Length: 118
Image 1 (cartoon, helix red, strand yellow):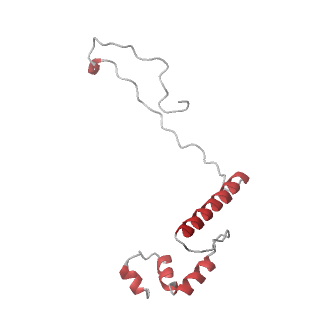
Image 2: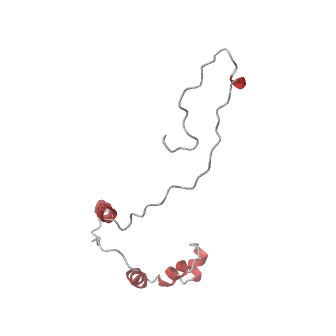
Image 3: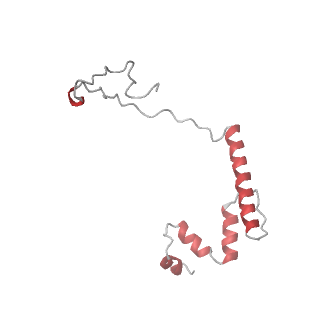
């Protein structure tokens, strides 16, 4: 593999079936540590945005199909959820205190849910 560390051997070691393995010359596995390859930011590229949109569509269709198989008629919105939308849903469900407790870093345990009013 090009660029691997240690470099690949260019020739095979000699085959010596008459010599015990433990007495044969060992390969040099010495390495020269180097940093990781440079990170390429692609989140804002057109291709990344297209992949994200396609993934959203597939996820929405999958969810829609799952609900349909369960006999539920639910509309799936293609819109990204915002924090205020999540807050509104939690408020309507009566779980805003629990949501805020989770946001503050509380672990999801029955005791913490009870403390948060759930």
